[in-house]
Length: 510
Ligand SMILES: [Zn+2]
Image (cartoon, rainbow, N blue to C red; front, side):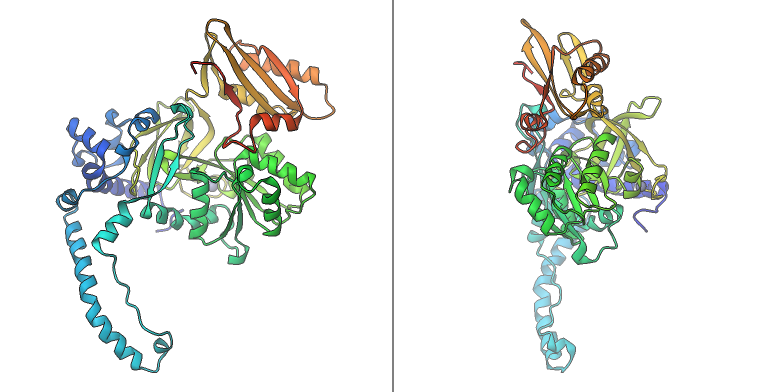
């Protein structure tokens, strides 16, 4: 079956089979947190036969706080006893067969080799014939279950302490295998191997996006030049690498990519090979897309396309737009249904609601019914841009978490709306909002903006203040100050932080 042309029924049947197996063979016997939860509430594997069954168990809802309290309990951990006693019944047989095969193959292999090596054939010229030998039972279990690579959340909601999510050998291999799919979504599937070159501008750390790009490139295979963004080898050297490597693909967080390209324009660098830009880690509005395309054109790129992505550490995967959809300004992020199930909780009349994710494959850290706090819609309709039948998460994605919805001086402010005010205003090049004070002395909002040259600053500030007031439910900023673009870039930490500090909450109890 083709991965991008199956019908909804086929995808759902595949998902159900996968989930049923995953719950019975991995989660129920080996997952410390959900295993205990299932036993406590009397949920048996046979109660969960399909994705829709999963939706009956509100006990399974998982949040950032629950995971942060006991991250190790979310890692699949088989014990020798459970490996042999839990389904599938064939598992012990397969493990024993692996050991026998390893011991047994050695003798006939030797004879076989000697016979073949006497023949004056091609086989002879290539030397000894190696029959593939299976991994031993121990090596196989370790490859599957032993944690290998961590990714971490930004720790915004847990007081700056990142929660670690583990990838095992199979998880890494699965991500690499998806490489060709991602390249085909990017419209870069037909490139020659020497033309597949990407510059990785994501911060080198335990950032999911960095790991994602490297593994996907390994699977294609494509050349990838990790630079660590501004924090790694620095913007100047990253730019030299981008130019010299004739990269076709740029990838990074939106703020930094924009900064990187502004620098490239100032330095009059030649980035004419760049065809695609993948942005990850933050929302991308139409203004941002246009500004990046414009900057790239100034560097000589002919027809660059900016592709947004949506991913979160808890799902251990990121989803991207198809190139056709990105050209149209974004029609949604293509999801691979065999990796996990997406639910939309409490949908409103526009069928937008909270995105809830259940992993149905792999090992390492596994979450079920994880509430992301992100609001979006989910569509099974074939993609209007590329025609693929893969389902899509349709934006705009708004975050309803504590770092976006804040109580300031008794008013509940939704910063999703505040962001829009600045992101949609063509005169603003950078912006930052600061919340200061405390409950007793009064809480205040300060706004800092950098504006385009040659415009009436006072008029723009008045317009921004009034739009801010509407967006923030009547709360007006205490001050609004105009900075130069360079000053604000430093304030925001675009080149020094993992993520630009757009909304800075400096209150003590926050
Ligand atoms: Zn599409």
